[in-house]
Image 1 (cartoon, rainbow, N blue to C red):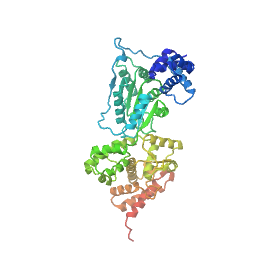
Image 2: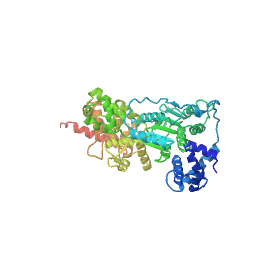
Image 3: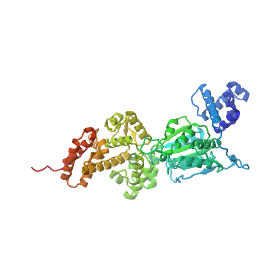
Image 4: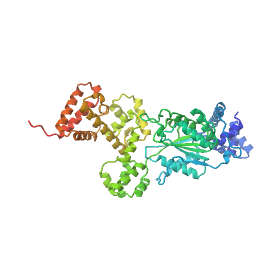
Length: 537
């Protein structure tokens, strides 16, 4: 038997009305629906509708009698959990003023002022439904850097403020790597209106205390830039050392019953979100994609761009990313007088702030993720899983390769082939950046090899080829490497001699020891010899 006091409390947390509570209390005690309806003086259809609303508010989907059993299981589980946990600390309240009578409190922290906002009407409507009607506990806005996650979060939170739905709206930025202990403590202090005089030392107990407040009040908590507390150089979604308690926070806020919502933005999906998310579950994900032509066109009009017939090409090249479109538009206006055609003639998409934006994304990749994107840059076209497996010389297992592809997908750095099959490629701006990055590193390693002839210092040059093998063309990397070497060593005959000596050193080693290095030097040498005049006899 579930106590009525507990039932009333949890009903309040899930926004169950008094009329719905009457049906709920009778149904979980086994009273038939017709008897409930007769006792309440309503039609059976009305009683069933009220119970149906209760199912929705507890996120119970499906049909049949199993729904009532599931609801009973949830209620019993919640009751037992709260009995074992018990209260950790008393929350002092000033006697003369009840907390519920106080006005709403909004703490916008480091939330940016969004003066210009483009598109996202459909996403905004869906998010408002998830939070206001479906009572989701955790909502994650995900997408590549610059896609507009923070701007959408601000617009969403401001619209919810206007609806006066929440007692508290609190925005916290994690971009400076703030510790979970500090963030949770400050949230508790804000939600208690600074009346919480004692904070537990352990993160677990602080989270328990925070969730108690989320049960008492309808709160919207926003955590912006969650990727900042995730580990670089590893598969996406892993926490930095000392920040693992954010994982417990997300898990418990997503699993435990309360009447609030945690909204987060991130370029990577935290693993707790991946485990708990679902289309009808209280944890949901909005993966932000490209702006449409109309929305992107608003950016171009604001920037004063000309040649509207070329706008679609520009949108496609930058995959509708609002930030990169704004940066490119500014450059087009300042350097080319707003003429898109003149910018497109330059055949470069990556420069200035766009390069910095991609660099931050690239720095987060694990070794196997880097190996994958490098090979996609070498081939300059989508590859299948089996093609990638055959090319990667670093010893990774098939499950690790699949996991890395999934991780790159969660980072929005790879895209499926045009046919939608199991082919993986890079969008144009990412492809150009990775190609430049690979070329820089390959040139550095080859220059070092020519200078020292030490193969133990080779990395990329040993594990990747310089020219494509899947198409007819060699690709852009080999010509770029050759041109850089010719600028460094201006005498082609001298360069040829150095390459010959290095090639002899490599050919004397076991093939597994040098990997692609031998064929790479041969390719550079052959490409150089094509340009050299014949030697006179």
